[in-house]
Length: 121
Image (cartoon, rainbow, N blue to C red):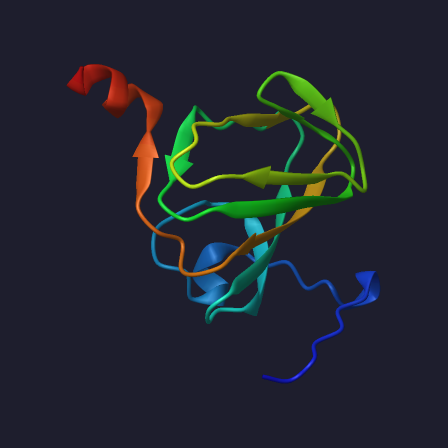
């Protein structure tokens, strides 16, 4: 595997249909490494919200630009968030967009919405 360096001026965030993503988030994004591990840049627009969910794979999220609310706490530029596998979380943006680097040791894994888990109980 070769070393990849992606500077801010190299960000080429595109819609999912243009980057060949099947399903998933409808956010602007950029795949850096699709293999294992996976590395994506994602742009979340102002006033964006995800409902509570979890992935079967652990994730590391790094805030590269802007800030976001993560499980009720503001996370500023430069913050690193580790989400263990199967841990429910949600996030939202405020008045400005937020660009994050999302890393997983393997594929996206299975997604479980918190509402599905509550309904199964």
